[in-house]
Image (cartoon, rainbow, N blue to C red):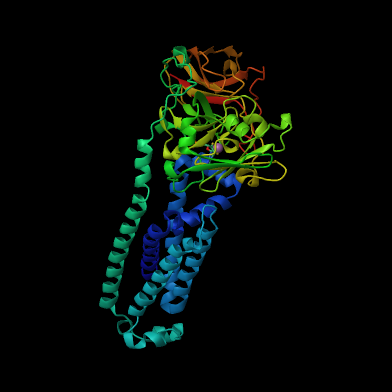
Length: 520
Ligand SMILES: Nc1nc2c(c(=O)[nH]1)N[C@H]1C(S)=C(S)[C@@H](COP(=O)(O)O)O[C@H]1N2
Ligand SMILES: [Mo]
């Protein structure tokens, strides 16, 4: 109990100090962030697939459970060896401090303070509490006593029950209060930024998207809506705490190899440029066949190629010296995209708006990159603040260091949205429907197969653009019994979605999506 209380006090004090220093310097956040970065690629991919957006909650709970167990162990050993307990807590403080200072977004050694001050408070408390467990007169001698001698002293003589309970209760109450104040201060630190986002007014785009064709989103029960609402849009990133960046203070620097006129842009600089509005479907490389990490939104932003050209950057095919564009976020993420792709005329953009509002914080406010046709991990840097032109040979960004591919165009894929796996539709006409995507190439055909039957061409909804997914449907005369429904798409290059199952690492899952149903 002493150990757990001391651990709790340490975290509470750390939380309060973090409010004064920097919320992200809190030990749980820092150690959590460090463990995300250190997690081997397959485990990370597994966590994304199994916990989805909750992966971070699971991680934080996991850290707290581990800490609680270690605190129990430390508390138990402190009863025998008082100094061990305190030393153990201090050691955790050092681990937290090292993690906090070495986070890529840490700018200063003051980030160590929450962990250090918290650990000192925890160690002191443990010392005091354990002292109460032994008779006051004997507490010093107890440290050097052996287990056998200890057992010889009657329990009633060693144990100041009242004193201990009082100290423990006050410590618990004080820690709860301190922790609560720390939490609310940390929460408040983002509030002014939340307000600043609410004040952003996006100008009308000079180059608007044409309205989504009405027939792009037929009304079929169970199919994904053509435009994914922001609240339902998948989220994949390594940020334990969503960065809250103030648009007013935000700057984007463009520099590096072959950048003849390095420049820095403010949010207002971008707002004053011609804005383009485009429908683009985003996909995560960790999306399994049939998985949910794909979404379609209407983005508003500035053309990335224009900014690069203004800075004197040339595409490699025109003699440019850099073939890799590395974008960096405020939380230290690095994402590498081919310069050739972002300057080849596609609508690569620095997005400021998503589905008619400023970017939600989870999706990169104030500015993120969006590039049609490339998986998010090689193109879609959120909370971007720096663009460096370099080469693929000289620099590996975050995901590449962890085993993912350097270049990763989105694979041609299709998904059955309805019926759901293991559904039990009634015999008769059953609508099979879903989405297919091959961003920047476009979808030309979708076929469905029932069991081992022939491929039947599905009806394709109207195409919005070749950068968006396309809905499809096929009415099926379902007969009683178990059936396997399989879908495959063909893109505009004529390439048929491969049936070869590949893992998500290194460059995206491949294979056909199948759904098993039982018709009643
Ligand atoms: N700063 C930052 N940007 C990031 C990531 C990240 O971890 N940190 N993840 C990338 C990945 S892997 C994907 S798939 C997309 C997801 O964007 P979304 O969360 O808005 O859907 O963001 C990309 N941009
Ligand atoms: Mo991703």
